Image (cartoon, rainbow over all chains, first blue to last red; front, side, top):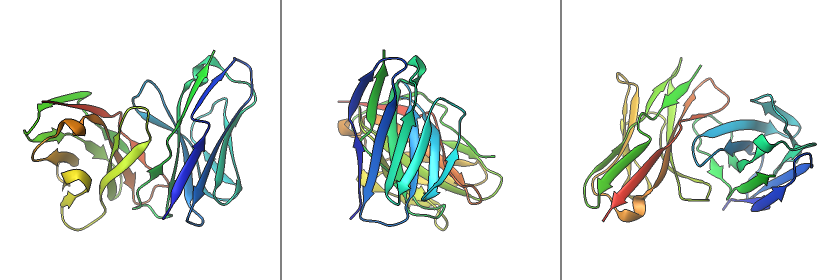
Length: 113
Length: 113
């Protein structure tokens, strides 16, 4: 069976500091990978998605970047955090193909002070 | 372009009563439709999906949803609500020609004993 891991679970960072959130998937190959941000427990904003190694689509111009250095590893980064980067960050994966549901990780709660 | 709307921020029902959480969508082609549930401080969990075929789709935990093409709706239903069903519910749509899904803003379901 497949599992998805995200870490850390919670993070408190000062404004202007760098960020690295990691997501890994086990038990499958060549998954589609996604990063979302959820503000105030409401809607999901798709930040990045990837259909393969080195292939990243950015959905919203912002202070963040994503990389996929290995098939089942997806990293969300920032060089300098802003207050507005605070939120709940969710990683997800799916099999390739439009009719496949997404499987979400447990999330990272990021607070920028 | 694709979009999804969940017209109710909050739905309140009494335990044992039927529940409905509404979702309408807009796509240029044919839709793939999904429902997810989120418990506090957790990632989303997949409940059910419509790809093709029968308009009534059955999913996890006794939930079902009916695809209505003429009304462009995909409402989530359950015949008898449980207190443990209280959570945040998300509808998502993906056009068959799109590379990603679009999520609604979510509906908070509260089931009172």
